[in-house]
Each structure stands twice: as C-alpha cells, then as structure tokens.
Amino acid sequence: MSVKCELYNDNFQNWKSYNIQKAQLVIADIPYNVGTDAFGSSPLWWKDGDRRNGESEKAGKAFFHTDFKFNIAEYFHFCNRLLIKEPKEKGKAPAMLVFCSFQQLQTVVQYGEKYGFSHHIPLVFIKNYSPQVLKANMKIVGATEYGLLLYRDKLPKFNNDGRMVFNWFPWERDGDRVPKIHDTQKPVKLLKRLIEIFTDPGDVVIDPCAGSGSTLRAAYELGRNSYGFEISKEFCGRAWSEMLVDMERQDALEGGQETLFDLMGV
Image (tube, one colour):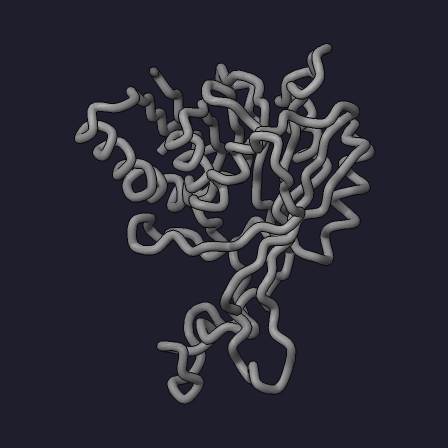
C-alpha cells in the first residue's frame, strides 16, 4: 500500500499552492505564547543544567520566534477549510485535535466555536516526570499537558473496538528510537494512539505546525497519508534528515509500504 507523507517548508496559510487532500484529522501543537519565560523552571536555563555555571543560551529566550506572532484565527480558518465535510452517515465525521497550554484552553474553545467547531472535549496528558525541576521540593510542579478535541456537529470517527476511552492519556517518552529535534516535541507513541482512534488506514492527517515531523512519522507508521507545514527551515530540514529518513530506511529493510517524501522549499 502506498502511503503519502509530504512536508512543506512553508506557512500553512499558503496551502493553496500545494495539491493536498482534505483531512479526516487535523492535529497540531500550537505555540504556547509563553514568551521569554519558556525555560524559566527548567535546568536548560543554565549551562549543563547547573546554575553555578551561569546562564545558557536559552536563558530569557522563547521556544520559537513564532510564539510571538501566531495567528490563531488564521489557524482555525485553515482547519475549517482543510477538514473534509461531515458525511451523512454516523461515525465518519472529521475532527481536529489541538495541543495547547492550560491558559489557552478557553481561547481555543472560543475560536473553535467561531469557525464552526461547536463541540469540544478537553484532554489531559499525564507524564511521570516534570520539566519544572528548579526548587521542585518547594512547590507543586507541572507534570501534565493539555489539549482539546474539537468537532462540528456529528461525533467524529471513533475506533476503540467498543471499549471506553478516558479523557486522559499517558505521556510515554519515545526513547532512543525517535530523535529529539524540537523542544516541545510530542511523543510518536502518543500521537499514534490519538491518530488510530480518530482515523482509519488510508485517511489523511494534516499537521499545520509540523515541527520535528513526529506527527507525520506517527501517521506513516499507521498507514495514514499525511501533510505537514513548518515555517522553520532548520526544523524542516532536520525532520527530513532525522525523523523521516529512518522511517524510509526501515521500510526498505522490511519490504513494507512504499512512501513518498516531498520536502518543499528546503
């Protein structure tokens, strides 16, 4: 079976320049807009994680320059245009999944409603560790991330063999098999779990903020077609050379699915 996997070094607003299929699922980790406090409670603020060594290059820096200019209205306009229309039959409707900060939840809900996503389900992702390690014995530290599943009128496609799915998911690290490229990279294991619930093999998954390309890798490994947009040339190049190249080699070794990687503008 041929699986399409395309990554564009471009803004998702320019989607009309590319011949991409509409999606069953749009999934993205939008910028958290935490500004220059991105590494405030992390040891990465200090050289080698030790404050005695002085501040590192990440001290007082944002995760990415896009944290300051992400346009959430344009993002929702894109998602509304690129998701398939709701089919007449039940159990086939599309959905979008947004990873966001706790403070952004209400904003995401409000913009979702404005652009036709009248329903939402809050999701929580639970870690067994915390990046907030500075003075951790003196405060309650964060060990969760948040998200929203948004849909229009009909309940989205749902695959779980009739079993219950909780609104929380374990956040399992990928380990050495998956390269660490992006500071806010989501685990491929987690992405695969979400993609397999809300899509079928052969469906299309779109990530408008592709970052490391982990969503594309997760979709490929499940036999879903995928398209991603990433404006950073650095991340786009590393996604191609590190996150997706191993997938292609593994496929060749195992004689499995064919794949088409198309990195545009890099």
